[in-house]
Image 1 (cartoon, one colour):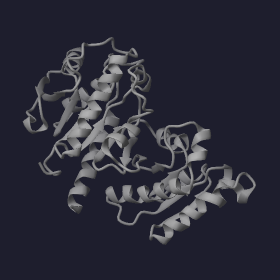
Image 2 (cartoon, rainbow, N blue to C red):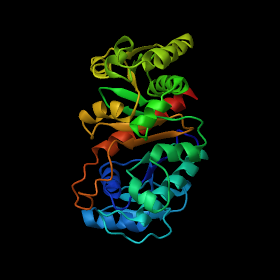
Image 3 (cartoon, one colour):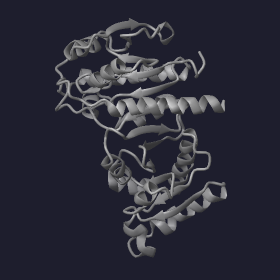
Length: 331
């Protein structure tokens, strides 16, 4: 099956969170070439709870999908998982979310699906199941065989790529070395091109206040970040900085830059999330296939109540289709 014709895999996420609900709402609202990876029982239960007319059809492989109207097709990955209490952290739910993702990765690696869109997982539930990963990104990197990956957060106004991801701030500072800086810049360039931006303008945020103020507030900008920027420029990448982290996103939003390279998790995610969780999308760069995700969590406090907003998942699907289209065009 070619990338152009292969469907998308849509993982249900943690079955006790809002993942199944936003998946069901999305595939009810829109006719998509997307297959759910997860639990048939969980998806049937949420459809009934929401009063949705769509039927749940179990299939074994992506090739069996027919995408009939009012039908949500599900590949069972949870070994007949019982319906668990919604809104609670449960080891079985963490295992089910992990199993769905691993099955989707395997399908993407063999080309049976064109990409993966992931609903939210719960890190504590996975930990209870003895799955020691801090998030989706690290699982995707390990099981896809990718040498280096990066998180790209995007909405209509700004895009950002992170030098470091899920780790303490102290460790992030240690990990943000020359190689990490250069890799993030390269991936930011590749990510923009994957979205159809032929000549991306990249800004790099500083690590310290005021980008170090010439070494007064720290010398990482002088010792590490500037040399990495110079090395990237020598490769022909249009990158500049480091810029003060408290103003660079304002300039990006005004159109001066296409993407910002952030040094650590919150530096990059706060500006994106401030503009609205319904608009932000997480894109994993460096994988051998497309992967996007809504930029929010499992929201156990509202799970099962029928009020979860599926707008971010819809946006994630749209980004995935855009990335696949650009990828197919370049092949």
